[in-house]
Amino acid sequence: MKFDSYKRVIFSVAVLTIAFAVACGKKETKVSEIGQGEGEVSIVAWPGYIERGETDKGYDWVTEFEKNTGCKVNVKTAATSDEMVALMNEGGFDLVTASGDASLRLVAGGKVQEINTDLIPSWKNVDSRLQNAPWHTVEGKHYGVPYQWGPNVLMYNTKVFKKAPTSWNIVFEEQVLPDGKSNKGRVQAFDGPIYIADAALYLKQSKPELGIQDPYELDEKQYNAVIELLKKQRQLVPKYWHDAMVQVDDFKKEGLVASSTWPFQVNLLVSEKQPVASVVPQEGATGWADSTMLHKDSKHVNCAYKWLEHSLSPKVQGDLASWFGSVPSVPSACKGNALLGDTGCAINGFNNFEKISFWRTPKEDCSGGRKCVPYKKWAEDYISIIGSK
Image (cartoon, rainbow, N blue to C red; front, top):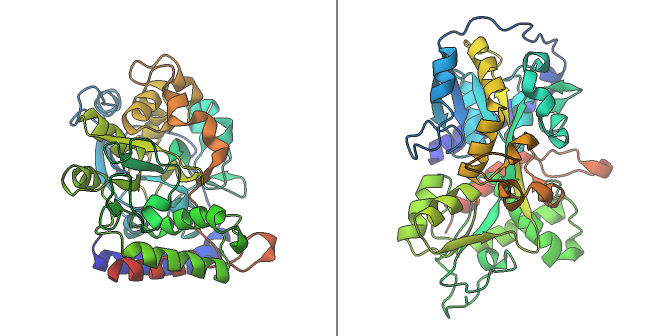
């Protein structure tokens, strides 16, 4: 996003923070029945999340839905969770595929409505680890339908690293890489404020004296140490990424050799015969568990509910997991899918659920009665870091 968009994000964060207490006290209603489709549905989604065969004709879970329901799918891609929050705050959309660092902000801001899971027959097939996940469930109410999940992996150039790197230090600490050249100017970092958690996860192991237990719950001392690390990293990073397709292009043309990324970019580059691979280093990884959420002012509620049910079909779940390199929220999708294969879920990390520090919005009040640094401060400081040099 451009700087003006970041200012919009800061405003949105402030508004949503103020709205939290108000929103939690509101009486809400939820849809009680599904009627005839309105002819369209508008979705804010991560790149690669809603495919209609335009990139690869083998990956299309939109065309059949449109044919069967009469609901035309309009997609607006967003590069960061903050952009998703800003877009939903502005309105005009029906659904959003929100990650955990956006979902609770949307609930707190009163921008999404409770989901009536009784109207979604396939809800019963959702992974039990996700059905009541805290990033879309508030006071027993579901505000999202689980979509996909996975880790933020370390992508590396296999010509530079003959063996997979074992630590995130190759993107955080200045050093000479196996090819005899410095990593300065050759690594990337994500430009969303939630990336602060990646640095915190690295320091959790590399500097245990800081006492970091949760990368999303940082007291002032811990937070300051993380910020100092990110300021040093700024000298290594020539360009931050937020657009998946731009990062793919950067790895092909800009001489980059390592970065945090999504499996989606890795899969695309590998399919184009580029010398890249990925790994989850010894420190672990942050990750995302995305939920499809319904705007409180949706004008196409019936089509939206039809999409929510469609999104949980094993075919859609398996095809998407194959395309994105993610893990389905419906375990039955892990078997019998021609694109994903019967080993695809294991390869994409189905059994690593407990090892991932899933994105969520940092709050001031955190566990143990401690006072932690809230997300608004994360956003302000990370924008400042990216803007410096």
